[in-house]
Amino acid sequence: MTTPEVEVLPRYSPESLPPLYTPRSAEPGPSKPRQRYLFGSGKARLDLGERVHNTPAPAYGKNDPVTGRVFFPSHTSKVTRVTIKIEGTLLNLVTERGLPAGHEERALFTVQRELFSAAQPAELAASTSFPFSLDLPELVDIDGEHFPLPPSGKWFHPGVVAEVFYRITAEISRKGFGRSEHLEHEVLYLPKTRAVKVLPLSWGLTPNDAKREFIDMTNWATIPLKPHWPKTLAGREPAPPLTAELRLPSCFFSGLPPLSFHIHLEIPATAPRQAQVDLHALDINIQLVRQVSIAVHGRTSTTESIVGEMCVYTERSTPTSRDIWGKIGCAVDGQEASWNLAKLVQVMHAARVDIRPPKHLENVVPSFMHRQRVWMNTEDWADDAPEREGPALGLYRRSVM
Image (cartoon, rainbow, N blue to C red):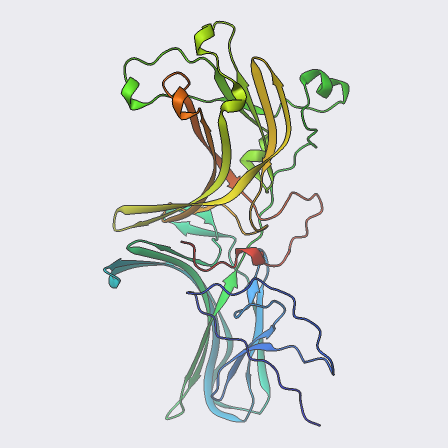
């Protein structure tokens, strides 16, 4: 009986972004056998299990053990030792005019196990197999401080590239003229993170509404926004004719998109009549931005990109006030997570608030700009979240410009 052909997936390339796990359409005929992550072509093989996820390398989440086996398809002689090792590395590469100009490499951890050892060279029969299970550390030590193990990733900045990668290696030692073997391949670490637990939100609640509906709104923070005037008015800034506040629930500071917000604009009773403005003429925008910082050779490079836009749900207005309730979402769910590795590499997020008057009112009405730090998570909170949740496949984004 002829075995159906199995499509061979391309080798993992950190320079390109493959489609994110689109389910394959069903094909007529007998189902194809699931491929395995199988490496090596000599006397030994490294088997890391079935391709459960459509990724070129096996992917693991928080608390997931790295399991597999080293096996010998045919008779192998003079074997003295078989070991398995997994290690994490941070690599920062400096470039000048597109060419490498220096690098910094830091080992994050190493976990090693001896699977077989013999005082005298041993004969291994065909199909001999040595299974293993390795636990990834939850924390890594950087200069005496402990940080959560960062996800796999590669980030490109002008003049510098940072990469966090994990590699598993099997070493087969043979005595005499027997050829020793070194089997190595990358594995992906993609940990899920969860938002803090919060109470449900009802849009447009007043304190009386909240009291009547037994909903606690005391966990909302109010952030006054600072007015900004054109530089041409330096030293001659008039009294602001309006005030602006950003109101955020506690989940905003450690959450999962979409994130809730409330903007409150008000013209104070003391504002001069000639300075009053139609609050609906103001351009209001809130964006979720990602900031990636890489520190190398005593310098830090930071890039920023927009990953989410606001959506207005409810709006209320009076002649002297305007309230906007809305949410900030992400283009793709599960692709954003904040983390920091001793500021060597950090991926942070912020809500960028920008309120601007029409150009003909710039000398009368100020702008309001604010950046609010947000800690992003891949998953929402869950009371019954399992200890092992599998990988956050949305984090498989190898290059971020």
